[in-house]
Length: 174
Image (tube, rainbow, N blue to C red; front, side, top):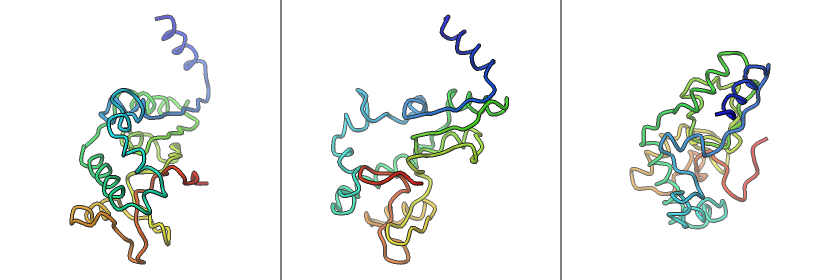
């Protein structure tokens, strides 16, 4: 209990707080982490391989698995949890300087965090991007193609679409 009191005191005394979040904050919202005992990659090792851009580009089965994962995440109707809401409270108190997240689920914004304070270093699963022309589209457009049986949705330019998330082998966005 002393640790909680110490954390509370430090937060109350701070004027500006930078927060970094990862998969752990969203597990209470029903999103599994990647490497834990019940992790996405632990239970499905092929999902880790499909998270590599070179595999995504060359393996239609891996692309189908990737889009299946995106569809499940989109259809899960995920809700922010107490952790997400606590960060909104920090912002409301004027203490949140920046919220940097490795998560692609968008739950910080759904909880009420200001989009201009959230930096999604691994991108966002709320949109897709063309690997040819870089056009960004709502994820629903790519998912509609997947639902129609196309496991390799394409942009109007003919380029391959993927969720606008950083895969292994890709650079982080500037």
